[in-house]
Length: 166
Image (cartoon, rainbow, N blue to C red; front, top):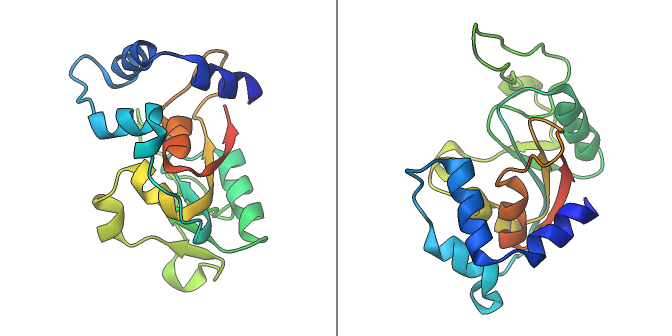
């Protein structure tokens, strides 16, 4: 992680724009507010740290679900998306799609897993939602040299501490 950390803070805004276009495609809409808060610390949103941890994923990968479950045993975690640390349910597999997490049934969800409301989930960018969380669990879909997505940048922009794997 330290190599990524150094890389993120040594790059120019031009490099970030090229990275953003590479990840989001040529039709990417640039969120200037997000770019400004990354480079101008006076514009960076303040993190309240009101909650312990946020976990946002829908694509099933066993080590992510196991990590979320383990962290929920320390303190309650908040979840957005289908993944909730439900290691007892098999993933939902559809032909030609990546496996999806199977959320807990409402009555079987442990009290240490708190689902963020759908309304709130739909109206917020990740880095805006992450402002209320001291930690954000973010694990890439693949662990490949040079692969990085927006996940870790979202955590830094929100002032959260990323628990990162990728």
